[in-house]
Amino acid sequence: MFDKPYRFCKVGSDKAHNKKHLKEVITYSFRSGIYYLVEVEVYTDDIYIIKYYLKKHKNNPLKYNLLTGENKCSRIISTCIRIMLSIYTQNKQASFGFLGATIIKGDFEEAKQETKRFTVYKSAVIRLFGVETFTHHRDSEHSTYLMVNNRNKDIDAIKDKAKKMFEEIFPSLDS
Image (cartoon, rainbow, N blue to C red):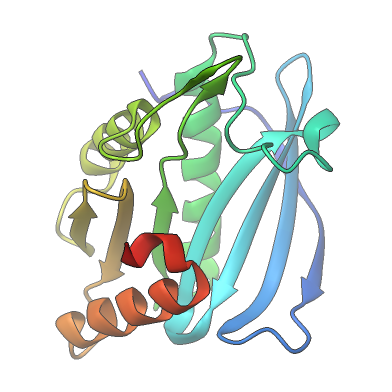
């Protein structure tokens, strides 16, 4: 499980003009039979947030909440982790995070606590990254996860800054 990633490529990057804390968005793509896009948001303190969705859902406001129906979760997550590793080889200070988005299907909307995606992603990063290089911080209530790079002098300070930054950017995390 989580060992057969798809081949991916970087397709571009955009500087974040006038967006507080956000410095850049790097976009990658891969194909599993259908096209996916992976957006890597680069924030202050070398924090990289990984998001992915089907390319055909690019303009859909619920793009992160929709199921693909492909049943290829482990390979997709493995691909995202390989992207993280490629970033880490270029920036040894990089820390990473993700939000396990709620599933929305028809009239059903999953609760934001301990989402199914959060549970799967959490298992993958614990298994594949361990604790030697990163200190893992989980917020099951909001299904968010932050891996702070252990090369940082004050890991708790980075965690606290990240928490405040994301509460400011995403007010729903503060509720």
